[in-house]
Image 1: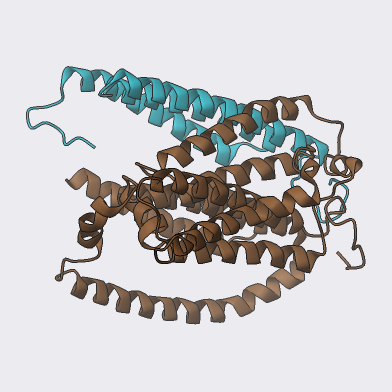
Image 2: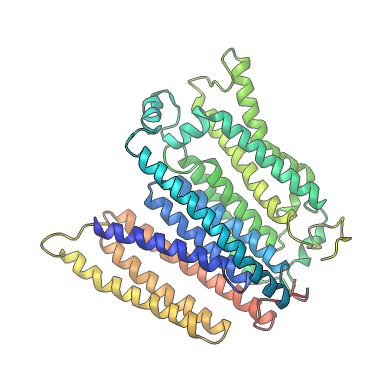
Amino acid sequence: MTLELLLDLLLAAALVGLGWRALWSEDLFTSVVLFIAFGLLMAVVWVRLAAPDIALAEAAVGAGITGALLLDAARELRPTAREARRARRGATVVGALTFAAVLALFIVLAATMLELAEQRGGLAAAVVGAMPDAASAHPVTAVLLEFRGYDTWLETGVLLLAALGVLAVRGAQLPTDVDSGSEVVSAAPDRMLGALLRTLVPLLVLCAGYLLWLGTHAPGGAFQSGALLGAAGILLAVSGARSVTALGTIGLRLALLAGLVAFTVVAAGGALLGGSLFELPRAAAKVILVLVETAVAVSVGMTLTVLFVAGRPGGPAYSPVQREEPR
Amino acid sequence: MNDVAPDGLSAVEWLALPLLLAGVAFFVAGTVGLLRFPDAHSRLHALAKADNVGLGLVAAALALEAESVAVMVKLALIWAFALIGSASASYHIARAALDSSHSPRRADAESQ
């Protein structure tokens, strides 16, 4: 097993190295790119830890969409040379203190984990024991949607709040008028970009659907497929394609609300049909779960697209209402 | 990852090993090019060409050791998609670099 240990040590060292370089980079753009690489390497680490669901989510959201958001932000935040020098001087003290605090936290956590390692329990045994009651064949999906469906329901609410927050602060809506998409692409409409979109977006939607179906019995599920849909939406929005804006305000609101509403209907329906909250009728459970997952995936995709599009700093194409802020 | 068999490598592994090493060599070459080439477009050459050949060789080595045809097809598809992705990305990066005079960093709002 020493080869695997070597691989794990290399991964850990690479993670630490990437994190250090991402933080102590001269240039903001470099930091963001290194952060994206860090996210991808983290996904590999999750696979090594036998958690493919988290790896999928990390690669899609942590590396992909967060990377897109950060690239946008980095483009706007170019410190001047003097500001950078001043920031760097102050940063060493703060950096040293933070490092000491994090090191202390790491030691405490490691000690706790080593102590807990003797009691080899965890919830895995309990979940496996309860699996016969679940409609999904995959333990992670069963935990997310059935055993702890309450938490996932609230998570969809949190996502909705995040999207609403961004829309409220930016005062923007996805523009419904026809021409606003063309301001983003500075040059003439690009044939390569169009060809790429025509290939990639249907493929993304197909993969999202596949991950959704896969989630019932293997790593996958609503959030991962929602992340793929969000990536497709961001791709469309960035290239100025009008497919996203063509949704209109009603479509935007429906898509954002779909997940929470579907989940609430299912939860309340369980209660109204004489059971308890979130209790599903045994026979139809799998179908109902797939429908709820679809709605959640659509919502997650739309939320991520809105977070990116409405959050773009000062882009004239996406906030037609307000230009009074200085850039 | 397979443990190396105690009595040496099997025949398939003897075939796969040079492919793997060649792939790694191409990746190293691509990385050296990335670090040493003077401007964005030549660096893109290093990335798009050397790295993808390296990926193809690594995928071929893994395909030789694959358990079933399905895995081989998946590896071939991975390489194909990586090619498409890197080709399109290189085109767009090169175009963007050209549009903003080789500099991806502009504080003023000239490009976009």
